[in-house]
Structure formats: C-alpha cells, structure tokens
Amino acid sequence: MENRIKEYEKFIAKAAKSPTRELADYHAEMVANFQHERLVHLIIMLFFVFLTLFSIAAMFFIMMNFYDPLVFVPICLLAAILFILSLFYIKHYYFLENHIQKLYKYNKILHKL
View 1 (cartoon, rainbow, N blue to C red):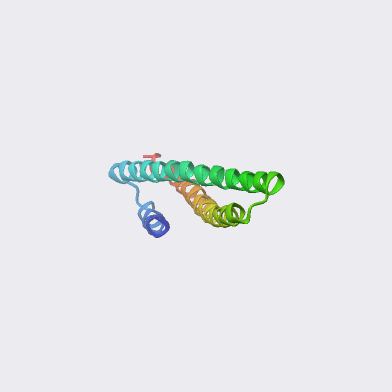
View 2: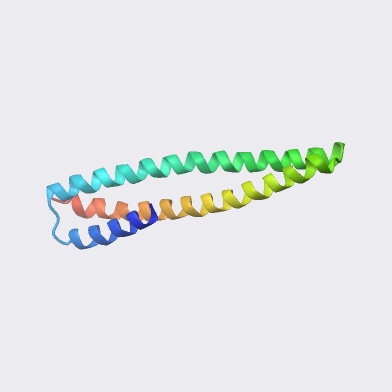
C-alpha cells in the first residue's frame, strides 16, 4: 500500500501540471480508495490497541491476584507481541494519514477547471 501511494503521488504531481476533467475524476476515485483503505487500517489498528491494552490489564490482574507462571508467562508474551504489532499498525496508519492529506492539495488544483 505504501508503494502504491508513493507511486500515485509521483504520478499526480506530474499529471496535475496539465489538469483535465478525466484526471480530476480519476484523482477523486483514487483518493476515495485510499480513504477507504485508511478507514480499514484505523479499525484494525484500534482493534490491536484494544487487545494490547486488554492483555496488559490481564497480565497485571494475574500478577496482583494470583501469580501462576503457567498463565503469567504466556500472557506476557501475548502482550509483548500485540504491543509490537500495535506499534507497526500505528506507524502504517500514520503513513497513510499523512500521505492522503498530501493528496488533498491536488483536489484544489484539479477542480479549478
């Protein structure tokens, strides 16, 4: 996805120098597709962050109430894995958000027709 957005940014930067109605329609469609992708990744990111917070809360609950290594260690591993995945999803969503915001500036250029 990151490569597609970068390639599209290069394409639209060159194509916006000579705007046409077809290019404006194509750009609107592509931005809508990228917005949809951003929404999906937002939902997935929030899901992983929720699971991470839930696993951390479960880890502390188990640690405070009854410390059983057979339960505590797997939950710690789960929390660590989910935390790392959440960081990668946050990074990816940050990339999507910033690059889609950059694409909005071409809307003004293309809709001056």
